[in-house]
Image (cartoon, rainbow, N blue to C red; front, top):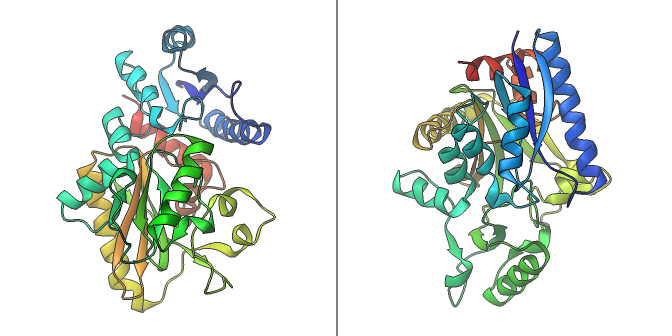
Length: 320
């Protein structure tokens, strides 16, 4: 039996009640699985007061820390502080190391690395270096934030003046840095990797979407159960034989990302496949959600693992 500490971000200062309900639902599900496996779970929070966090973590005397931190004080660019602290404390923890977390979470650095390694990633422009004209439709995205924060249909733009307007609005509302990336009209795949093995491929299908509406997973599609995009973006695991070559290529790209970014534990790679069948890597997610209804758990279930078996694999991969 191991004492497993679940490390979460401190929600007191800046999160909404819905955020708090969500994270504690996840903690409850993970704790139940840990207990079923014979482990002893406990919970601790981390804020920007890292010395205080260090003292409180040490009081638990954990054998292992489950790193569930995806931002600190709603700032995505601080995501690497949790693994950095745990590494400094020489505590084993689940998921990716600090360097992999930082590099993959900074979308521009990640895209530069993908490009250097010859992997396909959608063309982009930084906010400080926008061209005079756009050669295609582009989507305004945050450099750091995850979970589609700040993403809405109007983020897909066709000229520079509108791009600048959206960037200014998103910067004022959310802060941080923003950029534009070529909008790839086509299919979307979210592919999970567990301990170096690619799990069954998941395609997010845009069912009954009007052609004039961007086919994107915006913030509402992830979090607003009452909206059209939430109800009509559906995860599928079944594919025709004609997709075999594409799925093989996606697996190859996932394993290359695992190696290039030095990922560990579990991760997810997000793709768009254009109308010609060419895959483009959008993001490498080193700290994807492991809640029971998230993509990683769904892919694991498709591979024959129930939720407790998934938690067991994550824990076993991290224990010394």
